[in-house]
Length: 150
Image 1 (tube, one colour):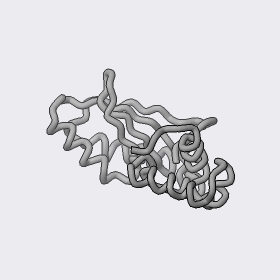
Image 2 (cartoon, helix red, strand yellow; image 1 turned 120 degrees about the horizontal axis):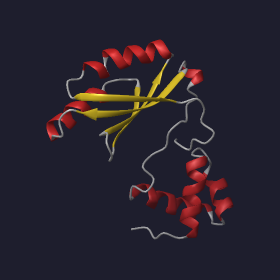
Image 3 (cartoon, rainbow, N blue to C red; image 1 turned 90 degrees about the horizontal axis):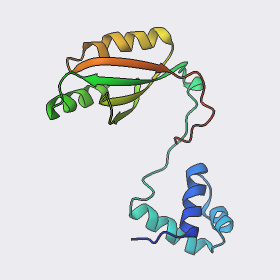
């Protein structure tokens, strides 16, 4: 397992903000030779510390004008109910994230839709039709002054 040290932490910090940085630039910024830096990055990838690289998309440029976080309560606390709910939301394109959480609700969803009418359709025609769902609470995002998801 790759050791956790100041240089690896710096590599991860830079890559999480600038995933397309060249190895040469990354090496320069962390104070390593290009080959030593590449060995560290490769080891971090191989061990799963770096799980992948992705593009950060602008929701507005993709036609997303409505974002909400939604808590969902289930009417049964069984494995079968959870699996059925998770399977249903996995196929819904509006659901960008699904988290099984603790507290008085079982799930927290991050929903992206074109607008309020699109969200209402999703709320009614998707979440509202799932037999496992007993409660839905929506929290509409009005702004995101800090968002470090990639």
